[in-house]
Image 1 (cartoon, helix red, strand yellow):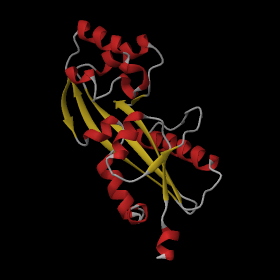
Image 2 (image 1 turned 45 degrees about the vertical axis):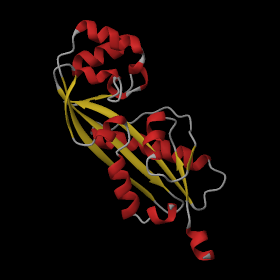
Image 3 (image 1 turned 45 degrees about the horizontal axis):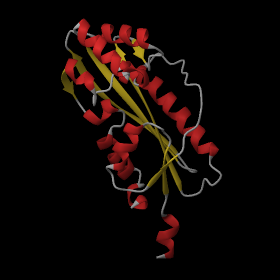
Image 4 (image 1 turned 90 degrees about the horizontal axis):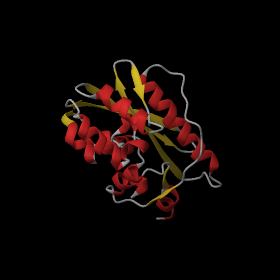
Length: 200
């Protein structure tokens, strides 16, 4: 029994996102939240590599900030929206949000969420991709959506769990991935890497 206790690991979510907190909570395992301030930047032009790079920067910053790094698993994540060869992060104001949404209007884009695991012994990253199709966005509806303020803290200027559902016509892939945390794949990777039994 003592050996099993020693092997137990503590889970830390390296994100202040209320959406990721809610999704991770569905796994019914205890976790704490630790965030780190950093300027997110990647020189990669490959969307999946870009997202993984940012996710790893977040996770590394959180892990290095911990006083006790023993028996800890940090999970970090980053979500981007991709249309063609253009990567969309979070808009910095209403005008930029409007510009992003109009570019996504009547188009099918890709949502990529990268997730990273950090322990003292290893680092592991992966990503999930989902295709989202927008209807042509009505100008009046766009203004009403921008009025909600939902756009400003979300990649691509929208959140699928909010009022933007009005202009989302089709989804191909994981819903939770578009929310910002591919729960099914996270669970699979936790089990595959042997962390799941140590968290329960």
